[in-house]
Image (cartoon, rainbow, N blue to C red; front, side):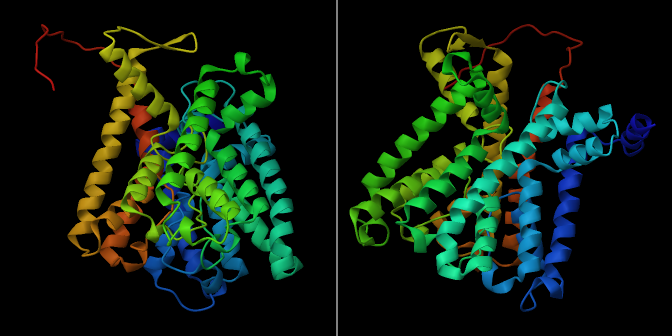
Length: 447
C-alpha cells in the first residue's frame, strides 16, 4: 500500500526525484522562516526576509547571516536553527527514511529514488543501511564535539550556557554550516588548541563524506579502501597542506590578520584554521575582510572545490577537481584513458565533471552579475560573497549585511542551487538515452 501511494503521488504531480527533493528543501526553508519569525524565537522583531534568508542559510548549511544570531534569537530560535542545520546537512530524506524504518514502514521505490538523489548515489542497494551509518556517525561526532567544546565554553559562560553553546557549535561545525552564536564567530578563540582541533576535526569529518568515514571504519587499511575514499583522503590532505602553506605565506605579516596576533602559536593555529574552513565550514578566527586580495582569491578557489560527495559540505567536490586535473593531464599526454590507484575512469565521469563545473561557473557568474547590478560595493567583496553562497561556505567579507532586498533574494537563490543544483544535474546526467539518429563526424577548431 505504501509503495502504491508513493508511485501514485509522483505520477499525479509528474514530479521527478530531483524536483521532489528540491520541493522538500523549499518546504523546510519556508517552515523554518515562519518559526524564526515568531515572537518566541527572537528577542526583538525581525523582518520576514531576514527570517527567510537565515532559514535558507541554515537549511543549505551555508552560514551567511546579516543578524547577530546570539543577540537576536532566543534559545528556542537557536534550537530551530540547529534543527534546520541538522536537516540540511544530513539530508531531509535521510530523516524521512529513518522515521519510516523506525515505524516499520517499507520504503518504496519513489522514496528510494529521492533518497538516492539526496545522498548523491548511483545505485539503489543498501540505501537504508547508508542512512543508519550517516545518523550514527553524525550523532557520535557531535556528541564528542559537545564534550570537548564544553571544556572551552563552560569556564567562560557558566555550565548550562556553555553546554548549549558547545551543542550549537558542534552541530554547526559537523554539518559545515558555520553559523555561530558568538558575535565575531570564533575570533576570540584564535589561539585555543582545543577549539582549533575540535571544530576543524568536526567539519573535516563531515566534509569527507559518510561513505568515506564508513569505509575507513570498516577496512582501516589504505590499500583496501575504495577508489573514492583514496581520492578523498589524498585530495583533502593535499588541499589542507597547500592551503596552510599558502595562507601562512600570504598573511604572516598582515597586521589585520596573522600579523596582528600576539604570538607565533596563535599565528600557526589561525593559519591551520583558515586553510581548512573554506572547505565549506564557514567559521573564522581572523577578520576575513582584512585579508589581502591574493588570499581572498585563494580562499575563493578552496571554497569552490569544497568537500566530498555524500557529505555535509558543498562546492563542486574534491573528486570533481581530481578528475578534472587527471583529464587535463591525460589530454597533454595524448592518453585515451584515465587511471588512478590502479583503477580506470570512464568517459562518462569526465563528461559529468565538465557539466558540473560549467553549470557551477554559469550560476556563480549570473549571481554575481545580478548582485553587482543592484549594489555599489567592492567587486571583490561581492564575488567573495556569491562564491561563498554557491559553495555553501558562509565566510563573508561584510557584503551580506549591506545587501538590499533584491540582493538577498539573489543570494538565497544561489545558496539554494548551490545545495540542490549539483544533485539535480547528477540525476539528469545519470539518465541515459540512445540517439535515434547518428550523424557523420565533423571537426571544429578549439583553443
